[in-house]
Image (cartoon, rainbow, N blue to C red; front, side, top):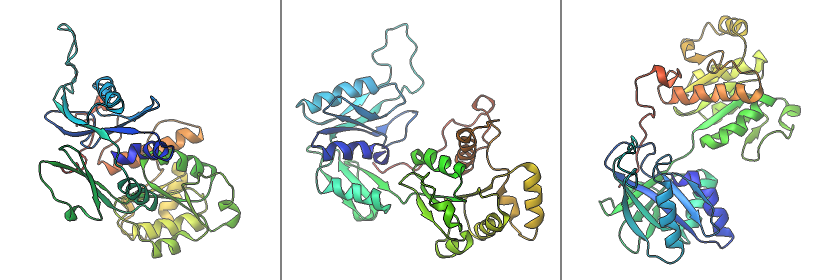
Length: 327
């Protein structure tokens, strides 16, 4: 997806260095990456992203570097394992992959994408699959033509992760959550906590009571909230406000004993079964990073309708279905 590699693309664009994008625009079999998966390859020899989890990246990297060296952009079909020797086992992702290999979008398309990501607003991005592979953008996908000669990706607003309490665990969670492409908001009514300096620059720090802030910024079904302050005066107000809306995940930090007391205090709430407490999966971790990983893992599992159990004990496809771009 463009969002995954765009910081790398933008850095090289600002430095005046060429970048070629290899994008998965179609396939006829299973694969580990969704349509729209993107590799970005720069003229300085570096690259980011993946198309198949490792099956075709070497082939695509070579083709992208040829385009950087002056070969014409093109759409190619690659089959994982096509260069294997007869006795070597074909990988599971053996279907044909249709990959467009062409320069990254020029101005003003580049700036439109950069601005949309920076301001977290929707944008529909389309590239023609015929030479010379022009790009176009629009506020909505309905404003762009749709046929078999184009590939369209929608940048949507990021779901939010609200962390209640500007604690050390909240700072670790905020750092790890950056790669999940969630907008992280930390709420704490205590002025001395929000000025700790422990949070990444990408985090929105707000000194406010969580229920008051949520009243003016309603949560959506793909948003998540986790209470971390250990102060019932703060956490309970956040839980009550979150349960009044459609937030997809509501979690509360604390021991089982603490959570039992919390449930007694909130027993009047009709939808209390939605509260995940103690928050997180049973990883047995003790460090801040391990605790943050546990919490984020449960958020991802709940978001995808999964249990969070070990993959070897399950039978569902490893990857949950995702909305695919339009080709």
